[in-house]
Every structure is written in structure tokens, then in C-alpha cells.
Amino acid sequence: MDNSPHVRFQATDRSYLASIKKEVTHIAAQIGFQPQRLGEIDLIVAEMASNLIKHAGGGELLVRHFQSSDNAGLELISIDNGPGMADPAKMMQDGISTTSTLGHGLGSIQRLADQTQLYSLKGWGTILLARVYKKTLAASPVRKEFDYRSIVVAKPGETVSGDGCYVKLTGSCIKLFLGDGLGHGPEANYAIQTAISAFRFCPDQRPVDIIQHIHRATKKTRGLVGSVVVYDSQKKQWNWCGVGNISTRVSSALLNKSFLAYNGIIGMNLPGTMNDHVLPVERGQLLIMCSDGIQSRWDISRYTSIQRYDLSILAAAIYKDYTRRTDDTSIFVGRVQGDYGGIG
Image (cartoon, rainbow, N blue to C red):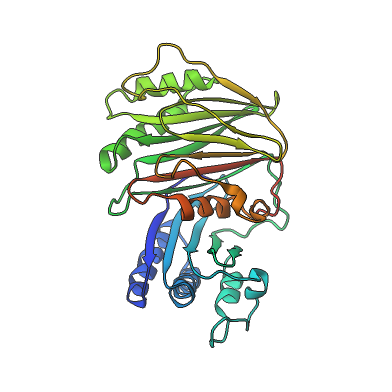
């Protein structure tokens, strides 16, 4: 799956519903969905937004189109700080409601979408994930050695994001980049898109060399901060190098390691000497990278059983509780060998 940005919609009262549905339908039409499927997507959006308003007093809907190697689709994530649910699985059944309604909303979303997951904690709020694909999904999808998801959202009021991330596979290595163009708006977006283009076509294997390659390519931009991680599946190790305030952390049951970045600005000034950091890979490890649009002291241990869910749920939980909403925001979450209940 690619790492295209999400469009953020505020669902605070019913007067927003028509415009949200119209804009999401426009995004879906650009992907190439047929009219019948567009109508079903319209119903999904209506139910998700209505639930935010009715049960949580409002919330956010994050929407993006995505493209994988053999499919494309639409991802929708609703996020709220409402009362939460004691039994989320039960609430996905038709006829179950916490209000006096018929209780068909969540059940209809589950029927119409190709993939759904609901995560909720009493007193914390709820995250609902739905994906709709252009092509029918395989009955038994291939399990990935390294699975990943991302959330990239522009600063409120901006139409483009100065944050971005990209993933590419080369031989036995998976190369990951997350960056943040200085400031926000079109110039920051130009910086990050130039960096992503350089990263995509860089032949180097070492993170230090990749960052230096990006540095040379972005000298005519306003600059950026960024981190590069290379997951080497043969050597079973992480290789990492970063410049600036991108938070990069590897977590497992036995380890919680934060990588310290070098001072500097890619495209403007790099340290004279930089080295890669190397860390052994373990089954079930999480790699989490965040721009400074996320507060630095985020903690995923507060989310009960969340590692059993799709990685987009975890990324959305971090976004929900720690986004500053005064800057562009990007979160990348990757997991080694095991989907733990993820939905593809």
C-alpha cells in the first residue's frame, strides 16, 4: 500500500454531512469506482459521520485513496473522544444500539466495506476503520513479513502537507523514509515531494548515504528534517539514520529503543560525520516514526490489546491523543513478522 496523505474532515454537526459526502465521493470517483459502489461509499460515509455526531458529540473523519501493486481503494477512519464502548464487537451486530435507533449503522458499514475494524475503550473514545477496494480481495491474503501503515495529515487550513513518507522494496531490504519540510504549505510540500522523489530513485543501501543523496537533491528547497530506516530481512537488523526532530522508536515486549537524530537540516546543512545505528530485528517488533506534529511523549502502552488490530488503528490512536493540530502531522507504524489480527 502506498503512503498518500489523508484528507481531514470535521464532523461536528449534521450541517457538515452533505459537504463531507460530496467531497469523499469526489475522491472515490477519481479512483475509478463504478456508480453502484460510489453509492455504497456514500452510505458508509453517512453512517460514519452520523455516528460521530450522534454518539460522540462530533469527531474527525480521515479519508485517503491508496494504491497497492495490484489494487486500489479508499480508506476511511473515524476518530472521536466520546464515551467509548464496553463491548465493541457486540456493537458491530445489526440491531444493537446505545440509543433509541434501530442499530443498523455499524452493521451496514461492515457489510458494505471490504475491511472494517472497531477499536474502543470505555471513557476514551472510538476509532472505526473501513476500507473499500476496487477489486475483490483474495480469500486468504499473503501474510507479509513486514506490514506497515501511515497517517499523513496537513495542518488545519492547508490543502497540502509538508510531511510525507515512502516505502520501497529493494532485494532483501525494505527502505523507509519519513520527512517534514520546514514550515507548512506549498513550499514545505515541495521540499518533501522533492525528497521523496530522490529517495525513490536513490540506489544506495545505507541510511547515511541515502540521507546525503536526499540532501544534495533538496538544496534548492527550503529544506527538511527526516529519518531513513532500512529493514534488512537477511541480516535481521534495522539500520537507521536521522537528521532533525523526527521521533523514531522500536518497541517490543523486551525493548523500547528510541534513536537519537543528528542536528541539522537536510538540504541546508548536515553534520560532517554521520553513522548508521544498527539494532537486531525481533519478531513482533513495532517501528514507529512521527514528525513533530505529534507530541514527543506518546505512549502506546495505554491502549489495551491494540497490537491485535490493524496498524492503522494504532496510528490513528497516536494521532487522536497526541497530534498538536498546529502543524502538519505524519505517523508511520510498521510491524515485523505477524499481522496479529490486522486486516491486510
